[in-house]
Length: 422
Image (tube, rainbow, N blue to C red; front, side, top):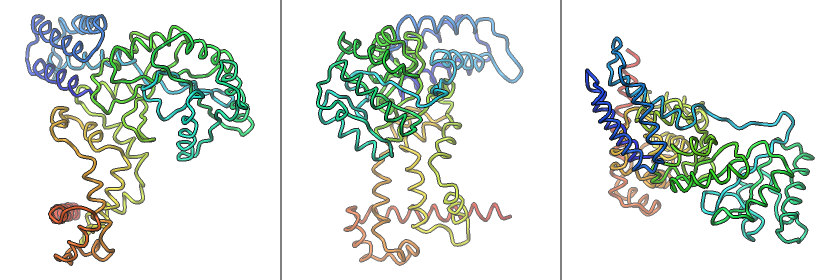
């Protein structure tokens, strides 16, 4: 996430933070690099200029504190200004005091609304129904139009009937998806204004493509002027997004980022926190986010069982190892987890080329073993390994490598257990 932006800012600030004395000339030179990095990340020129000017005004003349040199104070100033640029504070969803809470989703085609649908695309409703079944959410679709076309009046009628049904079934939240367009046009806005007036949504959220940079900002500004957005969902931040949209959208459109999309799965939506995102950009990590993700994804009882097995005299077997891998995969892409650790260099992460398929290959190998083989990997002779290779579709060398790494890990974990019992 924001690899070039994160690497550039961190390198520049490290150079400044290492200085015992920070002169005005050094600050000016460093902030010139900061502004260049922001512009290369597709941050708007005026926003980049104002950002560096605010940092300069706060940094010039800063006095050295005990145990904190001026360079380190400058890093803190940059962090605080980044937080302000990203929205100042977390903006959670606002729920109605009397349900259902109506949330209106708006956006253009290709912005990440592929997991939603509209009444103009024949296959979209079926796609949405399938997604709804996966998460246990009811879907009210085109069939409610009674065969009528997708005119503005019919769309409003469809949404109103869906909300009435949700009210009858005591649903607490209703998400109203809207038709996407290739660009902002009069017909799109007319329909959205009609919907807003008819259903009075509690939230109007723009789904914007985080990889489009300043285009996303311009789109947000257009929707804001027409509808009055309450927030933004910025998608595709797991890709090669430069960061310009995230750093510009709040200051330009005045709408806070409420969620970010970090993958294509149903669980790849994260609540957005400006302070924690600023920390991740400056490679200070996001331990709070990592812990929260673990609490949501991990089975506490299973985690405690695995911890005891890992440090026991016998140690983990391959069945336990498979259970641990399943827990890790539930937390999301491995590269994203590593990026939340303090000091993790974005450039090094990119060079590491974390391959998510590797975990799947390991899982396939272990699942191709019998329960006895998982419990007693020492019995895995040549013929057994060849059978496992055929079952998993992986070469024998990969199985040998896994067993060697597992043996080393088991010895290390047992060593930790002995140290803890002293």
